[in-house]
Image (cartoon, rainbow, N blue to C red; front, top):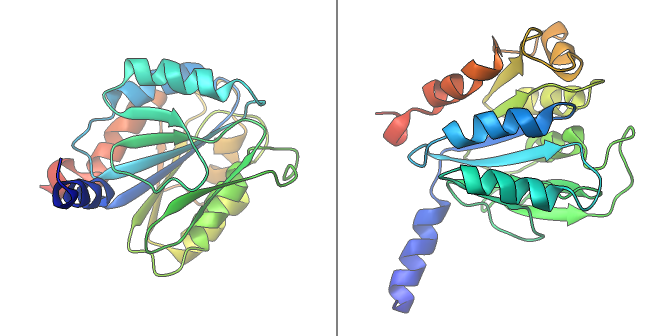
Length: 211
């Protein structure tokens, strides 16, 4: 491949409209194995996932999801530039932030747990809210899990960027804590069953750039 072709491919990989950020905990691996394979390559999006897991487990989770999905699913690496059609899973035992609004990229840190969580949904979501000059639209998805991780970050994001928020409903949640906190705070634009989350994402993003 020529240098010009490589450059063109790189530019194309970076062309996406939406950053879809997901936070999930108890019951997450099973739910993600249902949701991620139903996301299609033609959606103009890149995906971030914080799943509460200790160090050493998220790489296997990413590999399993990758084997089920048409999208590339991988454990996030430091300084990676976000690409369309790729799902990045925060490494267990690390914090994941997104930096550089003009060319969003991953920043993996060894910062302390935030309110007991490492990785923390709040840390990821708040980093998106802090991006400057970012033209991407945001979708935040908060799913099954204990506690309220994600509440602060989603609140920050909602105040800062055009953002649609999806919270999983009680009936389909293994533990109705994290999505309940979002719903009770009035931050949810959609409250959805597990099986309907993908459909809502598709409806918001639209196939083929909204056509």
